[in-house]
Image 1 (cartoon, one colour):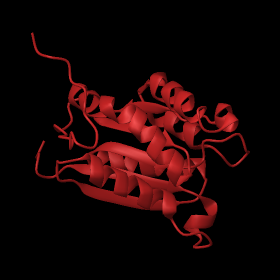
Image 2: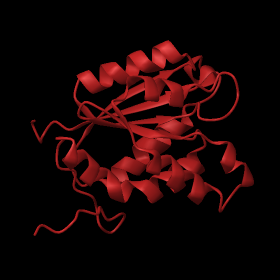
Image 3: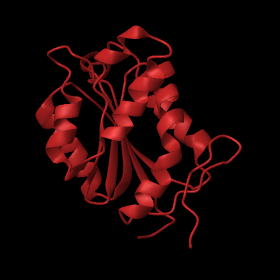
Image 4: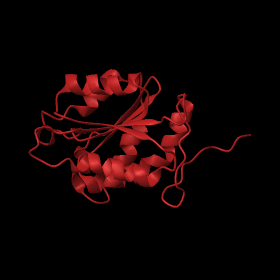
Length: 178
């Protein structure tokens, strides 16, 4: 893999944002956070799409096949009938990593009791780590702050590029070699 060509997928899943009714604040929040976290240069692959499971699955597969080592989604993780992001993620992944969703809900519960309604998850498709985040920018940052220390090592384990973080902002955890 070309370490100088790290690609990270960002998908805001929102019927209204995809129609231009709402500004795409969640996607911008993800990109801003990743720019603060990462010292490694990366190319964002950015999409705003409606809450349609087939389209979400197709977009996740497309980003994985084009080589995105990390794909971060926002939105579609609640209990409403149109919230199908976790279903789409589970449908395209070979492995689900439930610890991501567990930790994100635990962190969110410190701020809002409705965090128990959230269905964030994460999984592996080939050499891509897919993480589902909630749709609110404040919650996006809280959730990413919680799980991101494990992200670079997870990407190492699945054969992706080495992601270097700005340790003044967030410190990636990698076990010491023996």
